[in-house]
Length: 630
Image 1 (tube, rainbow, N blue to C red):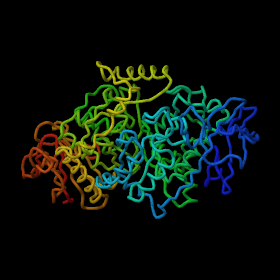
Image 2: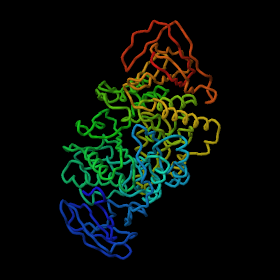
Image 3: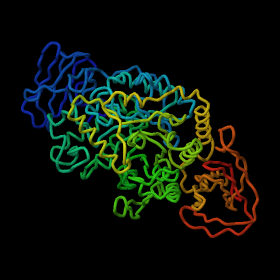
Image 4: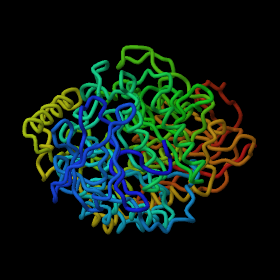
């Protein structure tokens, strides 16, 4: 495998010859057909099921199909499906006039992520629409945008997880040229770009991979049907296909990091797991190019092997999403403990997640009906990504409600602060920084009517446990998609503008204080369960200076005893202050009385009998002070 060029599909060499390679191990004959001329060129059979051809008769811009044993099919490694997933592929070059030569990827610990969906982020619903709003994101202070999947899917409306041409950028978003231009502009503005990719399944409509070879296996079953064939007979071509896809995004699109969707659903018992192979090939590419790239996994297994180095028998991912922090935070904030929230008791689980990232670390899960998880001790905070909202947690609600319609203005500020003060990498979901009220619903634009009906029924079944009544908006109806677009005019309204300024302040504090480090050893949690509150110490091991955060999730004012080993200095932010449209500022008072039960990294501390200070917090509020050890 030549890491410095694309080795599959149709590509062009330095002399503009078309270089073709397609994997079809069970085919008797393979040819390429140029649509506008009708020219048919036979490919040569090579080793391990690959068919090859070099030809000067195919030009950039030509539309073409492969002919597999007489059947015409789009290229599975197509770079452009201009007319949709059922039509011919277009021969293009990925050459682009990059101007980001001086760009260096941001250190992972400095990532502040912003997840967005290209189609609903702007009125135009494309990469140009994102470019037009990049200055807003720079002002906000985020350092990396995360694009939901952009691989070609049926129609023009989709979350992206129904992609079927993994190498072809969705044309309605701007195609490959549009994505390259967006990345180039992001780098000019100092923003890293993360791309969400899906290697655990492919969408159903327009998925022609089985016509080329054994891309799927009935050895395993997944929620989407037969699993992708990563470890059964003839799996090498499938594994090569996915690795080529990873390398293309990094090499040809200058993507800084990939977010790998639901890696727990990748069924692979090979001696070298697909993720390990991706890690190794990414490392080889970085050695050649000198560029830094990160691999971020979505996993719900609470298994640190995914983020452990290959040398330590891990799979080598740089970081992972932590849904359990989200679940614990939402229940703490008042989310009913139904459905997948049923396993979370609230603030005690939130305190545990601050300490351990995972909530379940070898304890019994009633929802899963088994002992679940393993400790992630020894892994730094920057290996965990936390959030109060994301596309799944909003969009998989029946009505797609955001926090702004579920929680008070005060609680929205508190939840934002809970995320941005964590010793982990914070992620925002588009629009939350101004309290967007439009929903984010599930939408598709399939052309297969039978499939559309299956999607409708499937969505309804999903909501049975968490939503007892009502009807979900029709995923196929364009109005569902349009209702999910951000309303940028909200930013000019006073309450929403104040919330945006509050997010800016929090992010600036994170960047300029110890809140921005991932030192879990310097993080200590004091749980006040009866008061529905907690104190969070954020510091650096061996350093005397730290930040003390107070969080009151209750609807009453609370007096929180400041641990006597701390000295409070400057107030950094108070969500209850008038400047944030709060209900009143907090104060520190001396108090000889003592009645508090604390936990430090989940261990009980004996009651402190000496004279202490109390921190008075307003209902549903957050406060942070600079502090030091006495």
